[in-house]
Length: 583
Image (cartoon, rainbow, N blue to C red; front, top):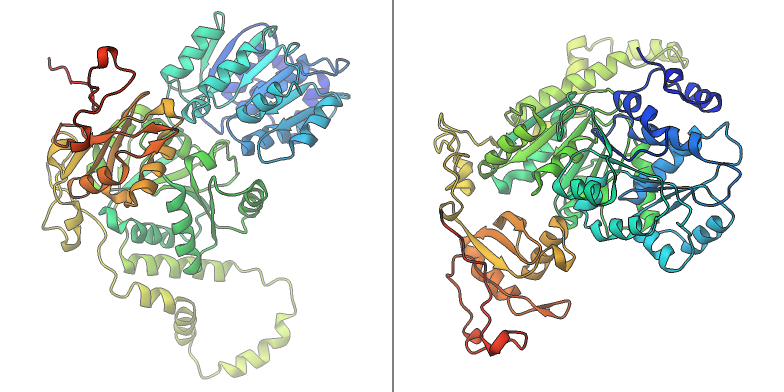
């Protein structure tokens, strides 16, 4: 088995590694470190989160940095402030025995004045989020002319968050670099484009299959009507009493709402979303890391870069619109070789997504039934009894009280004591789940919902299996809107925007297909007119929004005779999707 000594790292760094308890390098470290130590080779490393990527680039950087030169020599760009701080803390551990090597984290939400002051004192390694870095560049508070090594960590996440132009800007301002090191969990076309445009014959290393998931994760999914998601979530949490996990939602509204409902029900949970200040985010993450919170509920954007040890479960309250986001969500568990579980709450219209995910991560999803109320009570009961039996009684003068206890219970049998303990601890569970309904949606042999399986599944009427799925015949219609990624939206923010503007519930929406200049939205046919009325004709960034049915069923009377000054020859401009070609 390969050792860190065999990789060519110097003694001071090896001593730091020993102090950290690292024995052997992970696969990405073993393959990347010898390449990166040359300092002159562009590099692409594809590996899942939790595989040791920070050490894969952090250890070589420590060896390449010249402590005598007190200016930025290495730049690490990452998507979120949480990941920025995490990387910086790891680098501090790696440089424990290296004198004169200084690092600085620059990110939004903290004092830029303090960051500028620290930079001027002389640092060799800068860890930055794209927005704050560009702010510093424009203020001429950071000089990137002498940067030799640029590291793009979680590149796919940065691109998914809309940082493509920012990354291009940064790379164009590091003109004297000797190498770019790009690390990513997946390899979408956007990441490949960076490699093609800015890198020279990069060395590419893949740990596991491209876009594959962590083999230590058990992927499970549950089918329930959309309006039963919350009850299904609560039941899954109750069925896993030892859970320490993250719940993902598509919008910050959902994250806050579910957090409040579960908190009122007595669960230790808080929400993490974009409306929180940096101080609030730090407080929430501090409580979660110390396990003062059992659960964290977050949007994809807010949870980017979170690295917390020991997470047992990840729950998808809804599957993400972009299937590649699933890889990042599930990667929050099963880190550093441990195992974990990823649970997804779905409705029957999403079974085709499950098939897509199985192909993408090369792993099977297990369809599992939502436990019954009796199953939950039984699981909670035995969990409590296990804790009772394992309770440490070696400390404390309990024997002093034994005579009084024995006298108190002399006429009570052991069976009665157990019954009373159970009643005292589980009365609320028994009452809550006494008449609990079946939340499962059953499928027949052809993958269709079995109407006879349960009476409460009517909200999923019209669902299809993957093979028979037809957007125009499942109770949904497609709306066209002339907003896209060029307007500064990504999937989560776009979803939030249309829900806020229309005041509709997310349950009314199906698939969202975003393009650069426009987008298509699946929506319940009964609510389509309401959304069009709420959004069509409004302005976004001084541009009039146009929304209509993608299949041509809706036309605004006020559009008759409307003329756009930008049209050639004064021709009328028609707002709507381009005509589909039929082959």
